[in-house]
Image 1 (cartoon, rainbow, N blue to C red):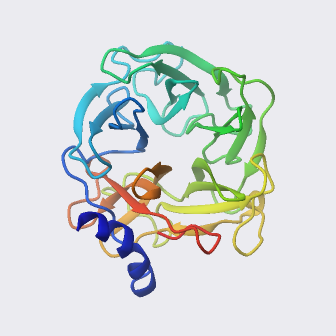
Image 2 (tube, rainbow, N blue to C red):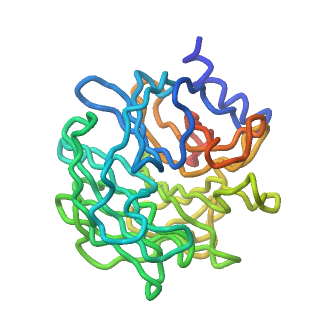
Length: 320
């Protein structure tokens, strides 16, 4: 019955109410910037998130029950920047049979930032090796902010998508081991209006298209300062037939010129969904996962919850 609800209800809810409610979550469900991956050897799910030097948890299914594993890098990062003991925005990927988690070192509002990487063959507690910086770094002289990394494998060629505000989302080719940047970065998404509130990109291929998902708006601090209506976090998307650029929204507006089609935004008791990724679940198919505030519980960053919905791509655009 649970599986029927998760798969069938999004289509009905999207038609009647606009958006489906998040799928169920039990156990440890308070997260910020989740990243989801499944272990090949036993099918166990692992979820990484901001905080506790990258918190992570495991479960038998996407719905849980989620059990805390602990801190990925309990000693912090070897990157010599402020914030190396407060790591952000993990991105978990499988590269050549090894589990990689990319993470951000920064402080809030700063461009003194870098994207690092740690690896493990098992994802077990205590098994992680920190490799430090990928070479993707930024300072006030850069057009971008080097946080919110997302690795994409395009047939054996690796690209890192990253960026937050300033000139928004960039992409850089990586070496064959996906550990170091291989050449210069280039802009793939930019909103020229206001504060350029685009960050947290995630690239996912479905059918003939590459879909660039990203978070738009104000992410945090809702308990002390609520944004104007519509300015809070939401999830948008552009698509392209190439992994490396020319992304447009459903109206044909370039993603480098403010384009972006809304995939999920505040609705019902769900407020400020974002920090998203896309995961191919063996039972559910493509799943959008994210964090959000449940307005019935509270608006604090520490109260954000793990949300997820199955995605329907039948129209050529993702619908939850």
